[in-house]
Image (cartoon, rainbow, N blue to C red; front, side, top):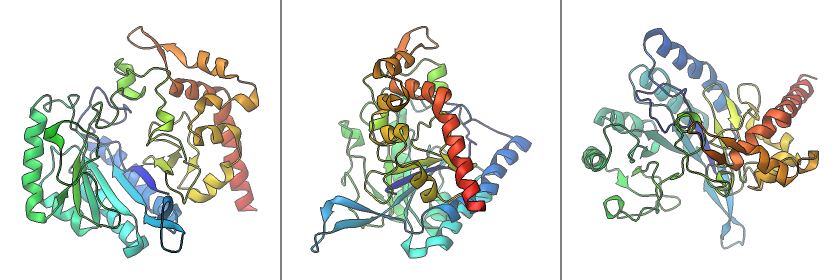
Length: 359
């Protein structure tokens, strides 16, 4: 895969109004131990069932032999907030150590997402010692309480000062037009191991300006996407998820090992990495008309083979949102098709895979 986005835990110190999943929230006492235990129980099998070869081929670049360039996969570890007490030592650091034990020098480039407001120099040192290549500060927007307006820039300056003694190089996503977010090196060069740090957030030119129709963002009526906003065809969407080993391929993993074709997450998982290898799951889904439509970044075509016209899909994608607005987006149509047809088919495919493996 080019990228794997793995949420290790739902534990977070914030309850942001724009969050794409309402399970991200503060947990305390036994609740925190329980939610962390979910990740602790699953991560050894997840790591075991990820690809042996954490590289991909990029046909956009060729070597002297004319073959596609071979590049390291990106493994993004996220929460929640992985640096919290009760999460960091208990789950996050053990996962980093298990990644190093599994792949060693041939492993993926590990990127960690954090809000940055709990970051301390000891955390930076702990991550770098355990092989983290990029530390991504994912709170540079006006939705994170206490970081609205210019307050976010004070946090950025504080983090830059913390990174400097460790020699961590600032890079960017190459998107923002705001000079305060400009960096000397817009992107990391391929093959440069880092370490790096970067800033991003839910702003129009930094990540998802329209906000996904998911979680608290949906409950609070904050998504401004329309039907033409095709998250499926964007990075972190479902496009190319089946094309493992090739540029553009990405999947998302939940703490319990459930795997999805996109970070937005469909109404049902493709399978579980606690039970099966990722490549086995993806290979079993190739050729399925609905999943090939997602893979093509054309979710409106999901139901064509089963009698759903594009017009029917669009009608199913039109709802009234919690603000009382008429809202239409292909993600809503995808949800409806999953509920009506695809969730059951995915369960049948999973049962068939497990039966075959057992036999």
